[in-house]
Image: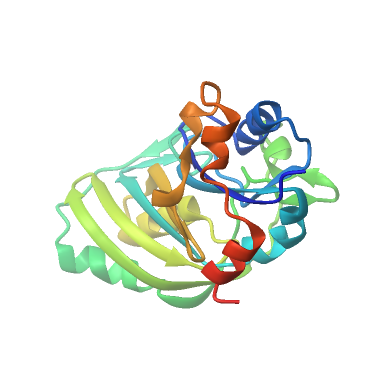
Length: 235
């Protein structure tokens, strides 16, 4: 039995389940879970829990996250990200950095966020994304979330690069969508990378793209034992 937490740097185009399935096959163990789903278009830190590590999965999922992303102004999609179909386009004014900063700053701290229809949240036992595929829209209960910090990293209108540190359950694509609405031109999330989860950093992760070709020993070099995880978290 392999016990611990394996940080993975997920590649674009893979689902979180894809990563788990490959790891199960390569490591020869079935007891593997993951902490916090990343959409297929997203890259970055995905924590795999192995063996007894699955017992602390909920604890790890509850920790704060850091993301770096790019939003594209002037285009709205049905999924709020680049994987969706464009539903509306608008002209993007020549915003000043002060105007952009005002819109970003509006969401600092505590607020309620309405989850997107294209999500794994269930309504009467059915995942919302399945209802969305049927062209249905249902009422979603807003979630209480928190943004600890944000940084505008670069502006190349219509694109804006940003970093956000947020609580669990936060949808970055909805964040981009809401900021676009505040600016009056709409927006969608064009790229996303999770860089941190709690005390775990993507720099300590094993590349998901190398999972299929690496040896079991090479992969397990990145495995954190449960005592190491406890020390890392300061527990």
